[in-house]
Amino acid sequence: MLEFLLLPSIIIFILSFIKSDKVNIPLAFVSFLLVLPVTKLLLMPKPYAILGDYLVADKLSTYVLFVSSVVAIGVALALLTLHKHVKVSKHAYRRFYRFFAIFWVGLIFSILSNHMGIYWIGLELATLSTVYMIRTNHTDAAHKEAWNYMIVGAIAISLILFGIILIYASAKPILGEDAMNFSLLLEHAKEIKSPFLFELGFAITTLGMFVKMGFFPMNLWLSNIERASFYPVAALFSGILESAIIIGFFRFSKIAMVINYDQLFVFVFAYTILTIFIVSFLIFRAKDFIRLFSLSGIEHMALIAMFWTSGAPFAALLHFGAHAFLKPALFLSTGVLESNGKYKIAGALRGYKGFKGSLFWFLVSLFLLAIISLPPSPMFFSELYGFGSMVSVAKESHHLLAMIGAILLLLLFLALIFYKFIEIYQSMKYEGEEGEKKVYLSELLSLVIFAVATASLILPQVMSYIEGIA
Image (tube, rainbow, N blue to C red):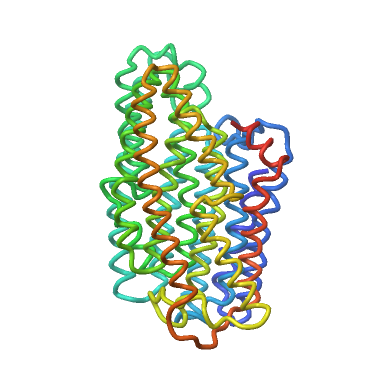
């Protein structure tokens, strides 16, 4: 099964060395095939051992990997017309796919890993390959941000590694060399004789993962990178790379919940509220699409972490799926919107004529309204379930009034973000000069895939499947 999962990446890597103008379509076609082995894995009984006890497909990891493979298909479709919107050399295009193949291999290992060391190696492989994908945009800004990302990524990945070492040290007296195994750690969490050492390791690991997702205190580095790189890279960051990070948080936090749930909850809750507080005001001051969507992504990842630790894994996973589909769709839409004037928000939706133009206008409007959790967006339901679970947790801990106050504060920050998105949406529709603009078929197909995937999340069968994971 592992060979089947890795085969499309290997083919993409080999094809990327062929110096031919006609290689673009085969590269995109093979990218579509990424979903086939993941779909087969999705249908297999769980848990399924892929590589002994090191790589294991359970319901959670398969769901995350399947969502990521759908995002990969959407990005591959948008890549077909990348040269229509930005200046990109044929060599840079092939190089992007080359490192995308490496990125996908790292993603498979990090998402499916049942071993802390393999998780870290996969995450490091995905991080390093992303640096080179940023540099496919041959501009001074992109090269600068690639170096910035390498520095910040090195800090974050080092924190994660140090935290893993402490977690391993806390469990080694009872598990020996198997103390790197996620499943065994969860099974024997109550037997750990040095819980403080584990809690310290968890806090440092979580800090590293949060830094990689743009949480406090490094809120701006992610938006700077996504602004400087090509928009498909921004889509990969938001829809795929963050998936590999957040699943690590899910696994580590499940163990931490058994050891000391109260400390875990207070730490994550305070950290995410602080992050959302800062991000909401940064979003209010955003002047272009990429920064707006990038900062919004940080807010959503903070909500996912908050819901997960508040005893609402269903809400967290539903929100995760919706974010993974909606945010790449908005980044890819940005590539179309900005091709007629970089950073220009006012009047951006005007000038799209005919069936393709009207469909594009409708889909972008749908994504913008869905990302701010207007019903029937999946995010509306996830936030409803998530905040409800937070109240239930507070009732059990006798801190109901404090939790209600915190939720009201959160809703205030979210209302500020809601206002900014509505203001920008109105500006995109009603202001600016109108000129004829073009949108291409492959881009529309990409957005349709994301729209269908997002809508499918609220189907009863899909919601039941996600609830089964939770």
